[in-house]
Every structure is written in C-alpha cells, then in structure tokens.
Image 1 (cartoon, helix red, strand yellow):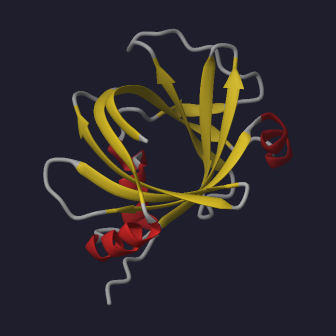
Image 2 (cartoon, rainbow, N blue to C red; image 1 turned 120 degrees about the horizontal axis):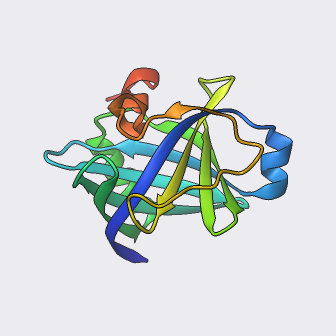
Length: 165
C-alpha cells in the first residue's frame, strides 16, 4: 500500500467511553508508533496489530495548516521497521485504536495506557468546514485540532522515555 495525498482531520479530547461498547461497535487495532529524526516533516514508523497480525508502515506528514496535511504512507517489512527504530527521536508510543463508523464518518478513538479517563478522537473529513455529527456515546472535553500538545509526537515526547543504546 502506497498512499499519498492530503488529509483533513479534526481532533478532540474525549472522556473514555466504555471499552466493552468500543469493542462491540468498532474495529480494534493495537498500535506502536515511533517518531524518527528529521527536519521539516513528521516522520514515523508504526506497527499496527489487528486480530494478532502485525503490519508495518512508514509515514511522512507535512502541515499545510492546522487541519490539513500532506501524507505519504508506505507498507514496509518488519526488518525495515527494526532498522528505522535506530533513527528514533521519541520512545515508542503505544495505544489501542478503535475505528467506529457512525453515519457517513469513521471516528478513530485512541486509548493510551497513561490516561485513565480521557482519550483522543480523530475524524477525517472531505473538506475543512464539514459538519460533524458525533456518536451519542461520545462526551467531548474539547477540540484539540490546533493544540500541538495533543499530537502523538508530543505525547510520545512527554510520556514515553527514549531508550537509545
């Protein structure tokens, strides 16, 4: 899979819904994500495990504005993933992602081990001002699309130690 394009995304801090409900309504993926050294972009590698099967990705994103970014993502081998870990600038961020469809949108709810009562919910849109109808079980604390402190790279730097050997 080679994906290249522009993503339009909004991000929200939410109260964690019932995990039982998320397991019932959504697709569960365990994610390990590490950000790599580099300038002018956000380079990362990801191990995504769904139903016990791992898949490895390399991704590069560049901001156009707070809601819009270019994104290039490629499948990589486990060996390439292991090699790229040597270029880590953050520790490996672990999370469980639940992809929950609701009406015409897909909501991605990321549950992190370091938070007990909150999570991040992202939704990709077709255009920047698209109206969002949220699932009724979601309690939004606030929108954090423009808050760089809630980006995964920031969470990795804040909560996950870097183990360079």
